[in-house]
Length: 171
Picture 1 (cartoon, rainbow, N blue to C red):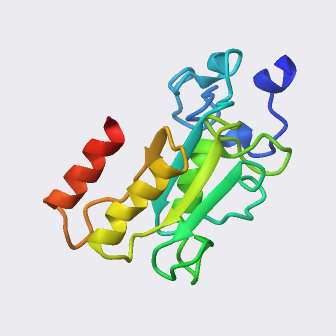
Picture 2 (cartoon, helix red, strand yellow; picture 1 turned 120 degrees about the horizontal axis):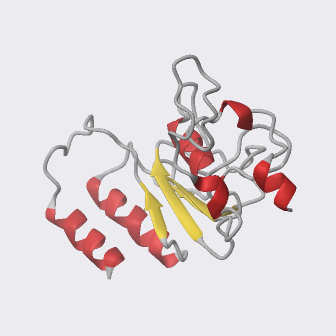
């Protein structure tokens, strides 16, 4: 196990400078990373549940499927938050940064043994967005990732319903 922590078998790990920066990229500075490799000696996220609320989360992605436990698509109102059209994929990418399994396939996430809840909700109503947080909480999420940016119609103000849901999630 310790050997895989220091030298994970995922073929793209060597390019993940944000996890272990050896100066592998031109201009890169050795050690300028999140310093996660020593943390993997303590935990790789076992027992943690994280939710990703975004444009999609591909539940059968080869780096995510072992950690995927549940999800919902608030656009199509079904249990599959996978991409519906080309161009969707931001949520799958952020889920990979968080929880890609060390499995000799692609990349490795910062917490590769974290259980994952995928939620597709960015094209939904404000009420659906609030419900997405409630869904994450109801499914045991201890961490909720939202990498949305300022392009949504309700930005930059946060409506009261979102403040209520976020406050409940924090408590």
